[in-house]
Structure formats: structure tokens, C-alpha cells
Length: 369
Ligand SMILES: Cc1cc2nc3c(=O)[nH]c(=O)nc-3n(C[C@H](O)[C@H](O)[C@H](O)COP(=O)(O)O)c2cc1C
Image (cartoon, rainbow, N blue to C red; front, side, top):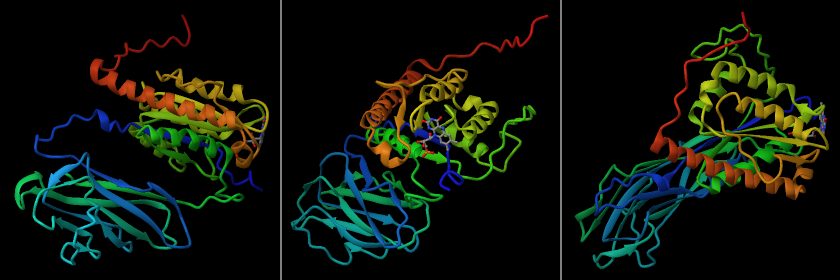
């Protein structure tokens, strides 16, 4: 039964977030604010869960007082607001659990070195539906010498943090944690530690059409709009790198991923140019290199650099549990992730410095007179 409803197609999109390369446009007496979530994704749960939001200057700043606010999704609750000054006297006017307002004034009104403004603890209700949720940090403002010499200007440091609640994965059934998904997540975890955000797109167990060569692809994509192909093209335009993953079926990629990628590349090839791509395969035993070779073909007709690792991009295992034991395969995935992160950042820098190569007008010689 497992394979009847399985989602055999996974595609990982990677988005460059090169914060370290951002130009610092702040005035000399201003500081940059870093807002961070303790987890960017959680599994759906039958019990309440918590997440922590930290608001801090990029490096320690000397101030006498500050304020700010956190807005959480409807129904979510702020249960605790803390700062890292053990001597702070917290009053209801400084901290408001209901509306997320926080504030701090040094006890003796002297400027103090502050390395973190505040940590919020946010409770997420039981059974929160899968989806993306936004938490907004606004109005962060800080002063020296009580209300003089603003070191942060209100409104300039707003940030939106996104928390993804995922469907719970189980060992069996429709939402099973598949070997291919597990493999791609290993690449994804490495991308995350390199500062690159990622999303794994699975098309689910619903029907997927083949390309019928109607040549009616439009600016908006494929004429068939009843599966996820056009949505994927739209996502691809926003992404800066790709990992296509497939289980091996009869020593080749699953027919499903080929049906999808034929249509994705025929209708939206331009979304991929000059973005690195890697193909990964998961198999019980045989057919991995042939499968990877087939998927690589999409990259090499779309001006995409192909990313490699210390071994061909494959894991062995019939189940996620077996894949977990393939230490070499998983190491190959982590190395792949690091190489992909490096290439994405290098392309980002190269594009800014040299621009992308310009194509010649197309010469199509399908047949000769
Ligand atoms: C129709 C079908 C054909 C398969 N053919 C092969 C094969 O040729 N070689 C192989 O090693 N494994 C084969 N397998 C096993 C899968 O490749 C393996 O279980 C894979 O890890 C499943 O990944 P998934 O959990 O992401 O679907 C096949 C499985 C199915 C359902």
C-alpha cells in the first residue's frame, strides 16, 4: 500500500540569503537588529508547542533604554518576555504579554552594554494547521542617555519571521517519510547551516499529466493547470538552486518526475538558467547512476551548472530507516549541500560583479534542407 499513495517526486529549491554580503547602509550611530526564531519549522502536533523569538543587536550596543513589539498569528500566545539584564525591574508597562510590547530602561538610567534586547516565548496551539505563519517584529527603537541620541530609528528595523508547520510525518501511509525526501532533507540541513533557506516540494499522490507536445505553453506556463507544475515553475523563478530527487524505479527515475520535469522545462526553462542543479537518487540496490544521469539532462540543456559531491549523488535503502544507516550516502548529500551553497554564493557574487552571460539569438536546426 505504501507505494500506491506515495509522493515520489521531490524537488528542493534553495534561496540565497547572503546576509553577510548585504551592504550596510546604516548611519554610524545606528545598529542593525537581528530577529531570529528558535525553529523555522515544526511538525503539526496534537499538543501545544513553543518557539522562541530573539531580538538582538548585531553586536553589543550601549544604550539606556529600548522598546519594540512582536505580533504573533491569531490564537497564538506570548507566554514569557525576558531580557538578559538580571537587574531589570520588569513592570506591566515595560512588558505586555497580550500585545507583545517590550521595553527596558536601565535601573540607574546609565547607558549599559546590551547584547540581546529580548526573548519572547510563544505558545503555538495544539493542532495548528500545516502552513506558513508570520511573526512580525516592529518598532524596535533604542536610545542612549534616556531619550537622547537615538541609536535605532523606529520602523527601520522591522522584520517578518516565518514559521512553517508541516504535516506530521509517520512511518507508513500517505504522509510517509520517504527515502528520497529524507535524502534531500540531508542536503537541505547543510544549506540551512550555510545561511540558505530551502523548501522541499512534493507533488503528492494525485494524478500528474505527461507533456503532450501541444506547444501551447504560455507566459503563465503549461496549459494543464490541474496539478502542481505551474506552481512549481512560479516557485522556481524565486529560487537560486535546485535538487531534484527521485526513487529508482526499474533502474531509471520514476515516470512521475519525468512527466513533471518535461513540462516544467518545456514551459519554464528560463526560470533555471545560471542556477545550480543537482540530481539525487534513492534506491534499494541498483539503477542509481542511470537515474541521476537522466535528471542531469534537464540541467545541461538549461544553462545550469551541475553540482557534484565526493561520490555520485545517491543513497541506498528501501526505507528511510535503511537510508539513515547509509552513512556514506548521507555524507555525500552533506558535501553536495556545501558545494551547492558555495556555488550559489559564488554565482550571486559573480552576477553582481560581471553580470550574467548574454545568449545569442537562437539557431534551431532540427532538420537540414
Ligand atoms: C516500481 C518500483 C520499482 C523499483 N525499482 C527499483 C530498482 O530498479 N532498483 C532499486 O534499487 N530499487 C528499486 N525500487 C525500490 C526503490 O527505489 C527504493 O525503495 C527507494 O528507496 C524508494 O524511495 P522513496 O521512499 O523516496 O519512494 C523500486 C520500487 C518501486 C516501487
